[in-house]
Image 1 (spheres, rainbow, N blue to C red):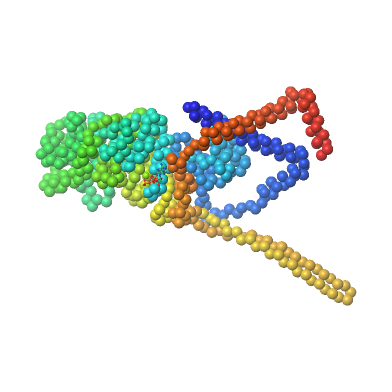
Image 2 (cartoon, rainbow, N blue to C red):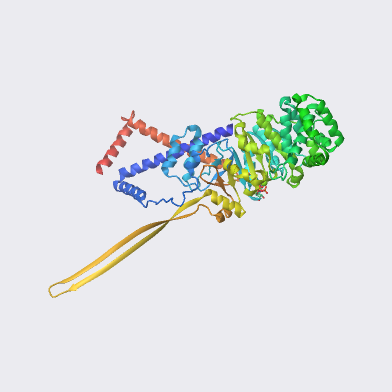
Length: 610
Ligand SMILES: Nc1ncnc2c1ncn2[C@@H]1O[C@H](COP(=O)(O)OP(=O)(O)OP(=O)(O)O)[C@@H](O)[C@H]1O
Ligand SMILES: [Mg+2]
């Protein structure tokens, strides 16, 4: 609180000092005019010359792509928003003129002094880079960068450090949990839960959490079978390219029936996915389950119906169906996984009802084995947000590092395309744009890029570089050719009567313009971008050239330096206030004061001598 107040005071003093400098500048110009009219005329002439000089030729016939400027970013709501997702800092913004600099100083409210200063100071060589945020109308973002391109340090960590909303973090290396779990607890008062069955994060003082998805299915007796089917859909992987979709469908039915049976009939301790695996692996237990379901009238008879569907399987088809279903749940044959799904040590509804951060630390080197667990947990958490109903003011962020490991997932598709009004905000971290098709197959890939904001921070493959170059589009480059020619000729005539001499000279100057189309940024240039640069592409916004700032490089200005500048700014502002106050006093109530009379006499003398 105190830090924010001091920062506010600092920004106000800085803004007053800036305005004071402008005032002194104009006062000096006026004084120059009074002292020497010649110097004044020279100054005005210089300004007129510089304004009328040149005149640029703006072509657009081959394309009008250009990088976003300050006003584009401000109009789109990418600047000065405290709550948006940080996408980097502005880089290479065209400097504004002194008028552009003066406007925010005069028009922004006092409370927005730091924004006014940021907007005004972009004309300086060392002007402050501004934070670019994802505008609220774009709910999701994807960061693309090869390994070591600062995806984690410049995006994932700053997001966790600066977004106060509830979050679910897919953190395969455990580094995000180690760096930010305690901070989120302390700074934002979050209930922090770390699901870390293999101890990759191992954050001291925070025990590993567990979540039993069937316990959430049980909570809604009226929707029990629907919730069981949702869970089964998360477990049974469908790529959309299966030769025979029957096997995925029947696996889904078998898992749905087993989960619904356990949720409805078993005790809370028995109702686990491990128990479902036991049942589906054992023909004897399956028969007992089906017999029980056929007698049950739970869920308005839906259990009986499910049992009837399963009982229709016979012979080889039955054996194959159980075998395929079991292949989808074999990830449960691991003690850490079974333990993680054995009970719920926290309530995921807190994501919506309170402030909670959940880290899912499932090691990347076990992606193949843990894919099922990852899908189950993520689907359960996404569905928990959907279950809370629509609320446009709510925000629950999902940060998915190494998102390519997810594969196609219905809940993820729903979250991206329909989750906005439920408060779902997703941030994907991919190594390259081609990885998107692992989770969003080709038919959905274009929709994905049209919905999310994309940040390319360290592209190493030519295909992604070409896509980026094509997306940004063509610009028109204007070539200028100037021709100067000078001719001189002399003629002389000598006659009897008279002699003639004439000299001619001419100066010919012509400028011609030619327009050429070229990509605003060529694929080779995308590949050779500086290490700290990123390209941000947002739907319907001009491309943004941004600067990546890793969390460890962000150091505030030194305290002594800041205090020194605050004192200087205060002195300048006070001196200006005193001078302006004195001038107003002299012009109004102090007119008869001897000092004012003497000074005005001297000034009249000076003007009359001119
Ligand atoms: N605290 C730190 N101080 C200095 N350098 C660091 C620090 N943390 C990470 N780095 C360096 O920053 C670079 C970027 O690392 P980062 O983990 O952000 O990359 P990444 O894009 O997430 O890669 P990957 O896809 O492998 O996860 C690496 O070269 C790393 O060594
Ligand atoms: Mg990383």
